[in-house]
Length: 255
Ligand SMILES: Nc1ncnc2c1ncn2[C@@H]1O[C@H](COP(=O)(O)OP(=O)(O)OP(=O)(O)O)[C@@H](O)[C@H]1O
Ligand SMILES: [Mg+2]
View 1 (cartoon, rainbow, N blue to C red):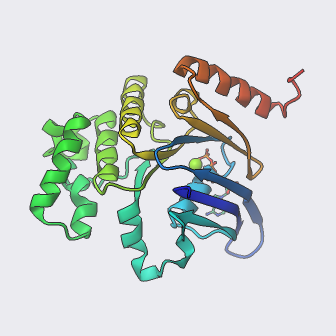
View 2 (tube, rainbow, N blue to C red; view 1 turned 120 degrees about the vertical axis):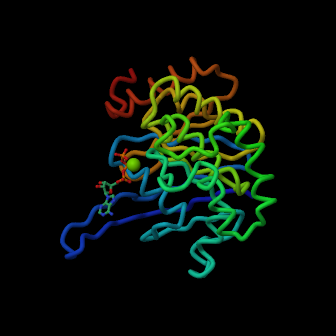
């Protein structure tokens, strides 16, 4: 059984006055196996954030289903939803989403505090993750006292601290300079190597070239996918660039 199974997802946004309708997703289907690192690419407005929000059950699809370990997330009662999300999913956002009035330590601890873990267990969980991410010496600092790359590493620590089934990342390198981007991609590679399943939306060919598989979304469907296999990051980068060119030109430059 796949860890994540997405079947025939459709999302139509209706504006408040019922006037305009936007079809963000037409029929999206794919699966993610335990331990995979999958990137999703697509032009701006192609529905990537919509898809992640539905996977995170922050938004409901118009049609279709999302199964996590065989459980249809739509079947989870509302009152259990935030606990389900906290226990099974880790989130990393483009703009970090850290609380400014909390230290990095308290930001990372938050999901565990909400799950009523003991202070001792919280400390024991944060310690090795903060060390692995190289932010151990920064834990008492506040977000405004650290760099963007360090904030993002704290956000990754917060995502990992609950030991989630899958990490969902929306443009995690979007606000980072190239050095911090390299650092974050290295971290994602490392945590994936240790078994963490990752699903990452990105505009960055470089970021996507680190994943094991890349899905391309266009016109509300998964249009194409590439497997990395034994390719180097450089060779995968080239393969993704070629695919993006073909997608952008509708495949006409193939011959
Ligand atoms: N809450 C909403 N209400 C109405 N339309 C929306 C809403 N959110 C997104 N849309 C529309 O749905 C489509 C998909 O948007 P989405 O944010 O998923 O794209 P995206 O692929 O994440 O784009 P980007 O790469 O710019 O982040 C767009 O046409 C967008 O305008
Ligand atoms: Mg988006």
